[in-house]
Length: 462
Ligand SMILES: [Zn+2]
Image (spheres, rainbow, N blue to C red):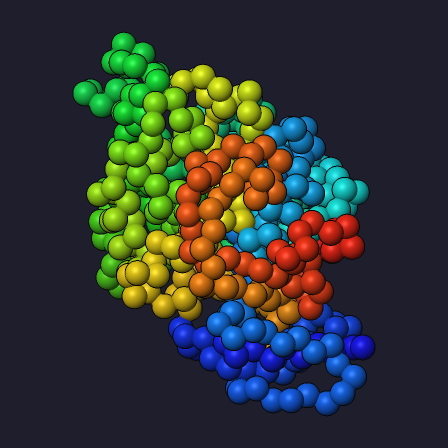
């Protein structure tokens, strides 16, 4: 059979925020969507016919452009197989892997080659692309990596936590931008920058004298004040104006005090147009007031802040100041998460939970499903120039998922498929669940049967 026909009482089609009945046809030879008709149209014989149950919704496959899979080098933290399995179990059909925490990091063309080889060898369960990295001294590698297929370049303005991925200063950034100036490359910033003078009264990052009890979350929160993010923003805006041909992006924005500055910078005819912003599921669904002592599964940088901050971030997602939402799935071994807030590794694990988390958060706020899905699909597809992903559209890759919005479920340790089952979401009750995931028309995840050998390793390297 070379054709798949999906009879969907509810499908989310481009141009509409609400699902509608549709008949979607997939050419299984190419893996592309070949036709979409409104309404349920009985197909001819000799096709793979898929009847979707009433109440369940067909959505485009989701995209998560911020994950750390850490292989090779720190495969005990996460791996290509386990990470991409967690992804498809939550409807994520495309991930883009961050350049750090693997060894080697993706800071050279050779590093990129090593990663691709490894991913090919162990197999991946969804499509995967790679970010490159900017570190001091690697500007001569950047154009080569771009030609080699990286989707852009990540850098840190503050220490990254691993020795092989040092942060950059203004001079390094200038060199990188000069090297890339004839391209329209995307540069991603971990946007925390220590002010030239210690921040009096807020607890400087390395100023242990102001630190009280490291088992309390408030101690950690005080060590990563919002000012770190706003001072980074100032520097990034300067570069965005200096290099209008390049694209600049702030990963995992947490500080709501940056939002008015971003709106202001973008406004007007001469406003900055080459800056995009992402935030994470954890900043939108968790709050510092509820983080227990020593609950280091909540520790990440920049930190999860208070509820007032969270509500401002939600507003900024709704008004478009924030362009999309990612997991920043950044795991490590359980041993490294032990101890108090100052010593434990920073990083939140939650790959694959995003749609359920956001649906749970937004469903009572009258936010249509279509808008939620845009933040998790098309907005990210555009960012990485994947023209054939992110929408159920003729000619697009047939990445599609079955979502049951009525299903209530609890995040349990054994429902998590990533390698190290340490997550702040364990115990949360969520509304809405991905039941099936198709990649290029092929079934790659079925919640009813669980992990099945025959469904694994069908992903491609982008
Ligand atoms: Zn990250």
